Length: 393
Image (tube, rainbow, N blue to C red; front, top):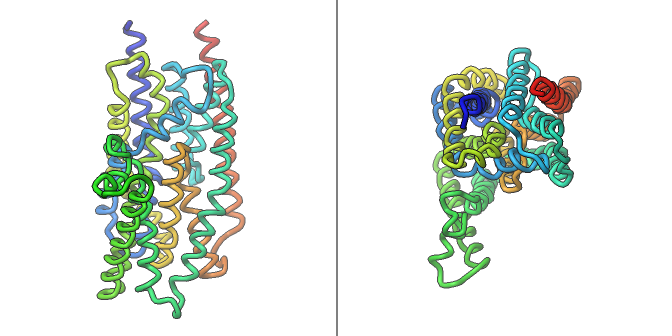
């Protein structure tokens, strides 16, 4: 491999690390624990420390699905060259940096997805319409599904006729059943999930055994939370909220790392000595460093906005956020954590305050910024790569 090619590969890797840092330092690194910090359940610095570790763990153990979709599933017939990877990642990170500095809510998923598609089409790739339909459906349905679930939970938790010793353990059971069925790379040899691994120890086979394990995990989670809330209601709610924040942070790493390292995957065909796991580790480290160095300021800022939520509304916000994020990981769809969290907050707010404090104008500007960033990133990716190809001729 000649020196110029090595230099391009190195620049692509640095661009990927920069994007991973932006993800960790931005809303994806700050959002999971911001409601918990706002509810005084954990300090800002401790939240940033835990978010970094959990984001790293999620990136390494679950990041392959979205990474493969971003790197190989957005455009058919071509592989992004090193210059294309650099262009796509710099556009995505650059737009994110502009959003952070100006206060506009630009989402990483939209910018990177648009930039990769634009670059791929510019070098002669074919649109992956089936994948676009899947991604579009996920993005469109997220506000309604996430907001609807948050609305339902926030409507039930404060009701006097539904004791929290019942409602919160039911939520814990649902979350526990989902955790039992999450796919992890290190469990691939035993079925990929905790439920499948546990089913191997049972005398029954197949789906029934996995269902039994899932039910057992759900009941265990419900029992523990019920016991904790019964003996200390405020403390039990706080600890359940922190657990949800941890699960959302883990899911953020799993889904967002693909936006940073996914474009690198096609290059691995030329670098056989570099494994996808090594790339995920690098992306995880970037998210970890970003969370530790840049997220505290964002967490503190967001927690002030979330301070009025309280533990119950924060729980209503984080449960659907975890479920939607893990659905995206399972489907291999890049998703915006800004969109997930904002939708859930609006849903819980409609249940508690009837929409009071929700600005239609601000909401409209947010949606416009999301859509505009996708279109702008696609146009910049296509135009930039077109110019690069002209200069190389």
